[in-house]
Image 1 (cartoon, one colour):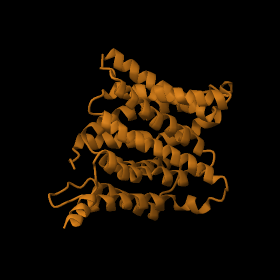
Image 2: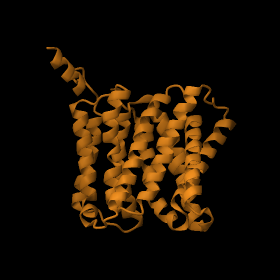
Image 3: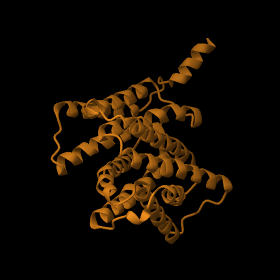
Image 4: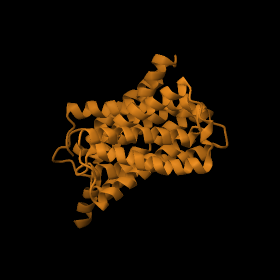
Length: 309
């Protein structure tokens, strides 16, 4: 497992912060536009911006059918399913439940990367993921306990759909990052994903009900530009150099950044239990990214060795 240098750590933390600001921006914009239409505009604006920059900078474009297929699958997973589930879930579940379910994505990825990327965590890494997830669970516990609406099952379905789409797309991004230009790849996946979203929007929503006021425009630009275009571009760069499980562990920072933003701008309190939870999450991330010694062996390899004895 390669170590993460300071530059990569900074890039990953920036990405997690950018994704954290998306939650309040979505809340600000949702009252002013239909959900899927809002998601479509976010993805399309981000995709067109990245492609425009790629053309200006004369970056290489995908040139094989397999590359286009891979990018289309990433767009369907990360953008179409990811945004569709994320925006619809807000109708049915509290932020606490959304945070917990969304943060099962690194756990899903840890299982799938072993099958498709041959990237396996050792016991310390698995313990780290479990610790980080438990920290998120403790943070969201008050919302989980207070949830009484029967419709929350629908919301959970949408969040799981989003998490699965993002998980699969992250595996594909990791596979594509080595040979497809990051700027072009992310621009095309966002644009292609937005076309699928646009079809859903046209079939299910009245797009004329958008209210183009200041709050919606600020929300849309914040989501599309730093929250999506910049974040996905940097994320693709990160996955060129390190394993997905290592990078994904940092996604547990997203709810921490959310808490800090709430404390700074929305007068939300950070309790002692939350502080402990933050410490547990950080410890989990450190364990996942702890440099692996020669004696460290992935669990799957240990089992194989035992079976051969």
